[in-house]
Length: 159
Image (cartoon, rainbow, N blue to C red):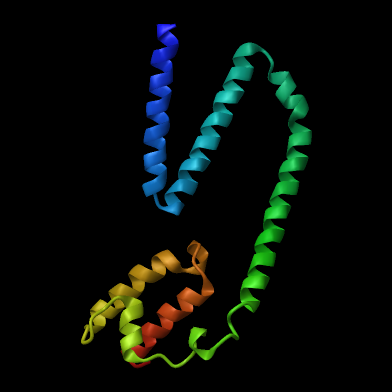
């Protein structure tokens, strides 16, 4: 009975610690951690099947699991495509100020890049590189934000 109490307290501590990490982590780090957790759990499951002598059950179920996995992948792709289509239609024509190619003042460009007026060319390039590294569409950002950041750099550099 005391063993169960100790295990329960330990489990509660682990859950509280994981919740604290979850609430303060960046989304990119959470995705990476969840992928590693899934891979680790899969490896532990395979090892358990090997050690218990029931690996043949998993191998027999593999074709059905692969079919469902492929359906899941195609569903995620379809959802992403639909989200891209709907995101491209909504809000872009609402007003001229929301378009990244709209006229941008130098003050707005400074705000977008997080710079003070009178920033040097090196500071502008550094701020642009720092922001675009996190907000580029290839890294999970949006086309709108990347275009806004690029436009701000162009306005400040006079290109």
